[in-house]
Length: 227
Image (cartoon, rainbow, N blue to C red):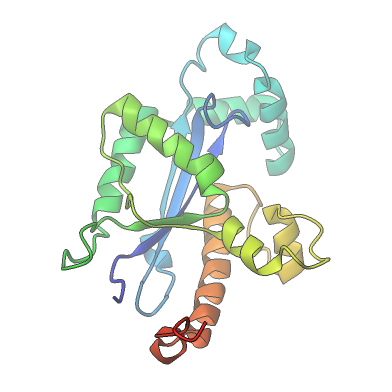
């Protein structure tokens, strides 16, 4: 059955490394047309989010919090205080999340026999082990339905592992390593959510195009009948 549900590549930046304890500070997403595989950059979503508790002194006492702020400062080439000020000026988490849920609702597929889920397909790099955990927490915290399909997810990390886990290169499966390995042109600051979703979408599209060239009904149908 041909898929007509849009694919949404999304990415969170956060104030701590643990997805179960962190607060999101940035969310970006970009849709991919499921038929043409065109990256719809004109419909990109991006929002800065004010992390919960940042106006309280104890916020900065949480484990890994200061180290994460310093990491962001180094990544953006700004000061520690500038990172904190940027986060404080972000949109309230509840409003930011509901804004994204409304955005995602604009990318539903057609309900038909065999396809009962119409929500867009989520995609990204290590979303199963990180970003999807944050999504579930936000849904619970703000009493919203998960904006993505329950059935399908496209995790580029897993996709690359299927194809490359037997190779000597690359040395690991970090996205920074993959950027260099594939020669992805740098068009922005790495680990900025907007930059990341555009680069992840470009990599995903290339692999989906490759998969489509390899697959056909003739190759798959009855492939195990003589096994």
